[in-house]
Image 1: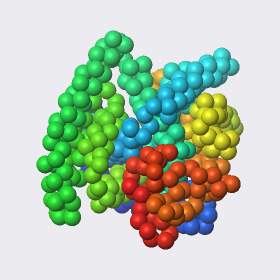
Image 2 (image 1 turned 120 degrees about the vertical axis):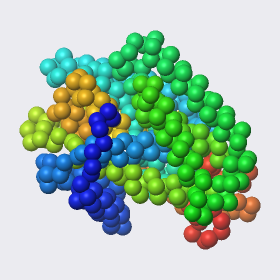
Image 3 (image 1 turned 90 degrees about the vertical axis):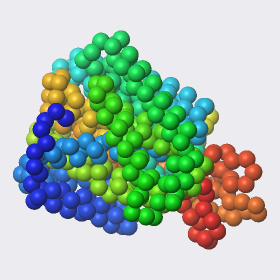
Image 4 (image 1 turned 90 degrees about the horizontal axis):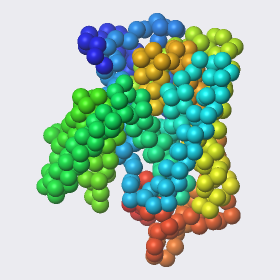
Length: 436
């Protein structure tokens, strides 16, 4: 982050942009063929091909700058998609309890690996395998139609804790400062974000009025001021010595509360285009370019990658199987376990921080990232298959959703909803409206 910004090679930039387009195209055609390949996996693999180990392209500090912008926007979108009112109560309590169980399992398992002679950091490695890639899973859940189901609600809660919790852990436990100093800095940041949030809510009515007026004009006030908020909070977090991800995540939560109850579907499409059309794919592709894949050439590296992948499933999947017996049937509990175990963005962030501080070897970091890559490639596919397909049926006075297995009613549109609907997600095949 402190390296001077140098000029970027036009050829390298063009190669990265072409890789982004090809990765998205490959994922799309694979999906049409019935093969679920998360686009982030295709982007990471494309980056590995571009990098020094295959095609030999180098990453300059200006490319790393764009990469960090993508990481910030990824966590902004995770915060933006997080509906605190939807996950409040039992989903959030179960998510918190599940993450605490995951931390205990993670630190215990990594300590066992250390006793076995494997040079791993309990703090960094344990924290990495206790994450959930909810920012990565949200597009996958949205495309499959599972985001607004009960499974989606509990996954959002577990994923929010599994992503926001490690960010706080990075800020407090992994800081070079004392715990008291880090806690005070975190309180300062929290106070600043509360002030910013209150100011945004106070200016909500005139701001939304102008946002809607300029949504289809060249001024694009909504997009511009949201980006100002995002980069402003990210800069504040950076200046206070906190993780940039914290600023991006909180900015997304503030924007979500600012737009609550307001229909601006055009804004959602523009935000998605900016986030997943350029910056987030840039982050994953460049992460692949900087990944040390030489460790995969050894049998020991491949074995350790498999061990880490299984450890991710054990650490994040076990709480899902134990805690949600009253909320989900057995099939959806297994789906929740698999989906909660998908990890990638925070694993990349934690391993980068650990290697930069000299507390993790590049080979161990590559093994962890490889395991996270496998988890993101395999676990969501299996989880969505276990979750089952969804169908729509019309009823007098509303719409209800029926699960594929046994005609079980999951939630309904008329009357009192079982699960609160939050955002426009899918249209009915008969064209009669959408949910919102």
